[in-house]
Amino acid sequence: MPVEAGRTVALAELLDALPPDLARQALTHASWVGSRADSYERLAFLGDVVLSLAISTDLVPRLEGTGAGRLTKVRAQAVAQAACAEVARELGLPERLSSIDVVAGGQSAQTLIASERVLASICESVIGAAYLANGYDAVAPAIVAAFSEQVEDALLNSVDFKSSLQERLARRAELVAYRIESEQGPPHQRSFVAIAEVDGSEIGRGEGRSKKVAEQAAAARALDYLDKRRS
Image (spheres, rainbow, N blue to C red):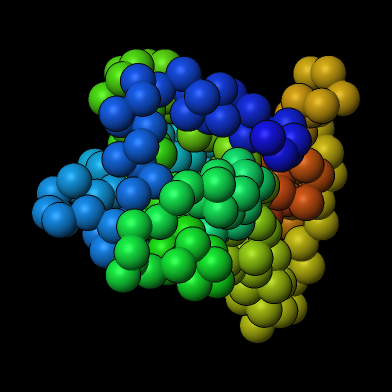
């Protein structure tokens, strides 16, 4: 069994503990069974919803004050096909697929492993299966941990709020400065609060698991503040 990345351990443990029939279905391609209903597709449908809910629930308090549009963009990037395929690889799902005896005439495991779309669907099916076996309260923290890197990347790179804020203020001959007001938590779970200021006055405040994420969140709040002041 491959060694999973630390953040995917909890989800991998839920996968290992699945009832045999459910575990088998979560990794079964439609070409390996007589009925598509016996493949992973229905579980992937369910897992997609559970994944979206878990990440949304994590994002809302972290991005307090952010509009629904921005929340939607961050979530969409964090749970996109590429992101799910990354988590699938970290879970060792390609190795699990390779160990399955494929029925004659079915798609080869190697062909499926090479498909980002398939890996993403199997990642969602594993989440769906874990939800059915354990319930939302058990699977949600495992999902948030498994996708933590994808979420952080989406927060940093989906929209460069700092650049947008700088450009907006430049048109008014103003400059923004950032300062870290506080940091807390152990090294592996650090939380930072950043303040965006213009001429010493706070115009935005944000929190994140790194200084960069906190500053981006502060810039996003500042943009919201400027939009409201203009309206």
